[in-house]
Length: 252
Image (cartoon, rainbow, N blue to C red):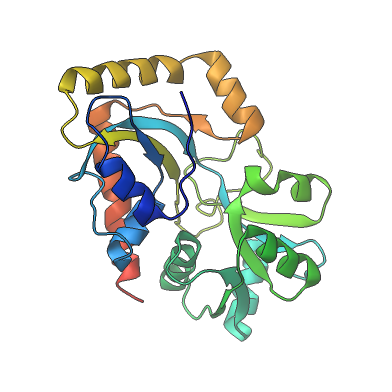
């Protein structure tokens, strides 16, 4: 298997869509697809213009992070301070991280944020470390070094349950804010791929997902978990996520 990292979602999706539907070209992506389609960055639909296979990994540890030097130590601190003055939030307008802020404002009356397009992940981390901004969104696995060395504090994870890798970090739901933002990654093929190929790919993918060695590798490298649903359950799951994103983006 040769991995090709294609810059730009529109370019990537056009390339995959134009590929021969022979099972030798596949794509992988995550719910950023829903954001891009809703905002018009791409005109393709994940469930209409491609043949979906299944979710192979799911990041259930998206979190809000603050600098350990901040006087914000808990989600309650953040709520109190956001009602007094806007919180500087490192994000990109229309991104998934922005959606978390929109949902938070819906759920927490009186909360205020300054949305700052702070650049890429490295720029956001710098802004948080330097105290230029108060808050950022990321997956815990991607900032584990900053958490381990004490530079960052995680206020909470946006998941139904605590992360196995970070069991001391509470969920937003535990703290009274019902926010869940899973980040599933799924496999798909160009539209028109033979059903036998799709079935074989799904069968193989599900065999990998129940392999303890694969689960251990995911936990070690990205601190994510394997996919755990059949194909039909996955499609409904992704449709629910998409509907939530569309509703939140309508507020922009």
